[in-house]
Length: 189
Image (cartoon, rainbow, N blue to C red):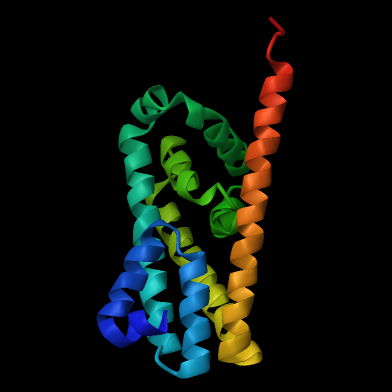
């Protein structure tokens, strides 16, 4: 990450905005942590760039949901359970859902589409989305900055490696567990 910032300079902030357009939690945490440890990243510019990128990303997905939502559901029927889950949360919690969906793993990318699909008001979504993007960007930049300052460069590197290894083990175990459940449901021949 430090090499990325050293090599790209100010353009790295554009990369951070593009990354947060789609997701970006890990990237933002790592960039802020590097900023705190080696001083290559300005936290205020990082905050602004990921706020803007996150906002634009979710606005784009919202408008795509309004325009193409029904066709998308027909084309990708496997996404229906996630869409229904997000729609239930939207109906139940409304404003709170829009302010917090960025923090719900597996929901963020689909939540804006669902909100557009549900016919949520454009202006209301734009205002709430702007506030939510600010909350998201502020919390992840602050968390990354705090972790970087607390752990230091060496421990930060090993912490990231340990987290990545645990995530890899988790996903591999989940894959095999899921496969064993499918096999146990299959009729015996």
